[in-house]
Length: 118
Image (cartoon, rainbow, N blue to C red; front, top):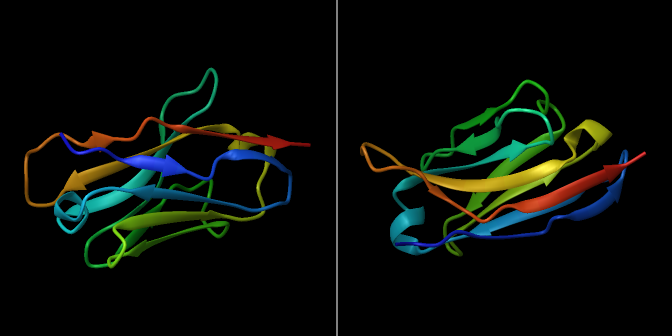
């Protein structure tokens, strides 16, 4: 089974920025909507952002205007640029790949923690 490898998490002060990356194989990447969910302590999983193979993006309400998502089709990497970070953005961020026009289950990364300090 294909793997999704995330990187870029860490500790940042409120108001700062952080970029997460997620890489997978070309076979998966070229056929999948890529995106990020997050899980904060005591909260449910929340969709952060997604981007289709055609470049259409979608964002959770809590991050609209602050986060952007992009994909590098040559490198098979999806990026989540997080700006104006708030303490409530603290969570484990999970990358996923959702194959389009398919009933295949989503593929998930291992998660990368993001901590925003006040």
